[in-house]
Image (spheres, rainbow, N blue to C red):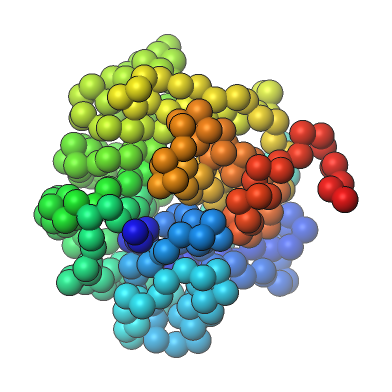
Length: 323
């Protein structure tokens, strides 16, 4: 069994010490991307993974490849072509100052050539294929082909995992909604947020709770399993929920402290997939996934790179020292 990630690999440039971009003299460099972040975590948990992407054939592409080598993510199917690396610049939030992201990924190798990486991939029954709305936003050719691509994956007996992950500064709601609606009936595992139901798909109103939102989407698109990590800003807690044929389940809420918000949802996704692949009970799966998301908030990396045992040993007290 292999978990494939279909999407763009990015470089993130971030000023140190919560500096604003306008004041930055140096920038830290991280390798990431939603699908890759999930694969990095799954690889640490011992799963076979393969990244499906296109990278430029120069030093920045090699930097991304090196990160994947170090993380034990499979790179055999990555295409290297002439072009540029997708990047973004992130100004981290601090206190009441909001964070800021500036994308520079137009005409990247993935935006131009990413639709070709799915050609002749030998996906087998039982495999998982992960993609997000970001992938659909970046490459117009993928949007045009995505229904056929996913139907072919389904025909092979593989599981399709989709995170809606709508980014309004990458594509408009008018373009996104018809594409997303066209693929939802093909999805086996859906990751979503409440605003996806109330503001994007408009299947629900704001007064509806998460259970109602999940049930409405599930009923309309016949999705076998749906999951979400819910953040309570005022209480600083995370709580995972899941809806399956077994019913609706809300997990325990965990306190979290933010060092970094990047990749928290991707870590949650990896935790859910880890539990599903291992055939854990859903309450165990959603608890593990929520802990993954909590832990990712404590790292400076884009992806959670820890052992399974580190997740189980999540500290119950702030600053606890394990000896």
